[in-house]
Structures are given as C-alpha cells and as structure tokens.
Length: 405
Image 1 (cartoon, rainbow, N blue to C red):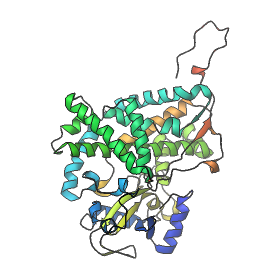
Image 2 (cartoon, one colour):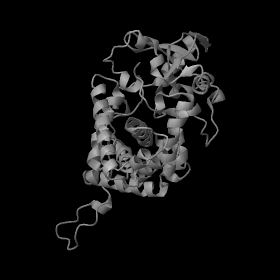
Image 3 (spheres, one colour):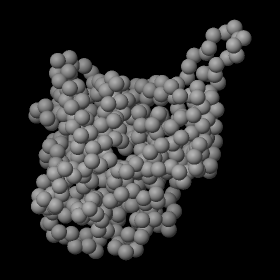
Image 4 (cartoon, one colour):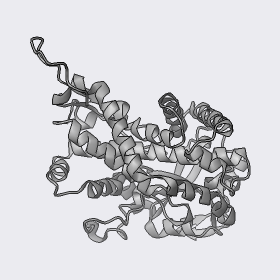
C-alpha cells in the first residue's frame, strides 16, 4: 500500500469497484482491507468485542506470511502499550496519557513554540530561501514535544531522525525504532535519578503504570504520535497557503480564521492518512465484504473524509469539524488541542515572519514521503522577502545590526 499524488482519485476508484471496504496489499504478499466508509469506520473503532487493536490477533503474522524483518512491524506489531490494548486494559493505559495531556499549559506551550519557530526561522531568514519541511515543519513539533518530556534540542533532533525511519515502514524502520526507544529509555533513567516537573516524571509516577516498560511505551506513544502527525499538519497547511491563492488570500485577509484553515486541511489531508490497524475477532460481513477472523483492517481516515455520508453532495457547511482526522471511538487521539496549539502557532509565525512566500519549484515537482501511513511533502523549497529585522545595514551605517527575528 503506497501513497498516490492524488489519493482521493484512488479512493473514488476503489469505492466504485469494491464499495466502502476494499482489498489492498500492505506489502507484496501481505493482504489487508482498507476501510473507507464512515459507517464502517465507526463500527470497527467502537465495537471492541469484534475488532481488536492487539496485533497478536493478526492471522498472517502468526502464520508466518509477514516476515519477522518486515518494515510494517514497527507500526503494526504488538507493543505492550495503549495502542495494542483493548477494553479495560486500554482504559487503564489510556488514563496516564489523558492525565499527562491535561497537565500541559497551552499558554506556556504556545510561548515555547513561538520561541522555537523564531529560532528556526532565524537560521535561514537572512538567505531569503528555505525548505519549509526540512528546515521548519519537521522540527517544530518534535522540539516542542521533546521539551515537554524534558529532552534537550540535540535529543529532539535525534528523535526526529529515528522517527523518520520508523514511520517509513522501509528497510531501516526497525533500526529507527530501536534508536527511538533507546533515547527515551535513557531519558527515563535520568528522571529516576533526577525527577522534575516534566511529562516523563509525571508518567513515571502515575499509579496506572506498573513498571518501567509501561512508562517507556507511554512515552513512545505520546511522542511518536504527537510529532509525525503534527509535522504533516504544519507542512500541508503551508503547502496549501503557498499553492492555493484563494486559500492564502482568505487566510491573510481574515476571511478565513487560522483554526478554520487548519480544519480545511484536516478534511483534505488528515495527518494520519491510513491508521493501522484493527484485527477481526471473528468472521463478519462489513461493507459488503466477507472479513475473516484474523484479517487486518486499515482505517482509511483520509478516504472517510470524502465519504458522501459526511458531505452530502460534496458540500460541507463552514466551520465543520466532523472530519475523521483524529479517528473515532475509545482510541481517538487524546492530544487534539495540544497538536492544534503547535500547528496554529507554527503556521501563524510563518505567516508573520516570512513575507511573500512562494515555491521555487512547480507544485507538480513536489514529492511525498514513502510512508503508507502518513502523507507529507518531502520538501517545500521556497523563496521570500528577507524580513527587515535581520537585513544587514549598509557598511556606512553607524548603528549596529538589529536584533534577529
């Protein structure tokens, strides 16, 4: 299962041929089902007695059809964390995440993200050119989320590199996964010696988490999910601003609020395009397809957003947040507001500090990451007017160079 330049065209073709649930190949020889219908997505996300998150129920993995070296496994194999748990076990492991998110001071986070954004922009603003993915969107959420867990900037960059490999589901995926967990394990050990007020310490002290592995896996979930998806959201919004004149004009003129603009992006390009996974606990009919016990089902969140049931006649009312970008049911994303704060701040800062943004390539030359799970531009090469605050004054000027952005 790979990403297409126009996935919604593919979803339309699949619906015409198969209906709301379509057979797909996750990798050569590994079958699965892509669930594209709103009704069917709600069934598999809400009926835990019929569809499990626990990959130990995946028949093709148990039967050896999926190789132990498969690049799918870092995203799909069982982990002893909230993602792989069902029902009461899921509730136990979910509570520390909800409590941790509830501790986040969004005003303080917004100030922290503004500082991160300005520091990043300051590294390239004087050149009038940048790659808004590699130089900006790829780092804002990781540095912000890492700081919440008490990690420094260097560790944030290391986590980002490991996550790129993990989410790619390519040959280096398992190496990236091991590197990612080792960084977090070292952080956990440090906090056990020197506890602070960060989220690592909060998880370490939560009564629902029984041992170090459960604390570590809770960190894995919060950091990995919060980073990659927010990077995609920022990148897609910036891409839309630069390539869609109407969208950019409405946003800059105030006709479209930043939050409304962010939701427009979530409708078209949700950060998690395809969400792994659910495993059928018995034979069942779903969307006209015969699903067998042990089959794997992928949540087509992007596809569901174009389901006619969500937008009859293809028209959505304004300010509509009924999209499936955050999934549904008990496993729905717990950090929607935090992700929005980071994305809104990153987009707003770029709007104010980078005047005259324009692509230096055609939109058709933009490529997309190879991940089957997320769809993000691999690069956004842009040019812009050098902000006045960092322009170097003429050599004859008596006053010193002004403060950087």
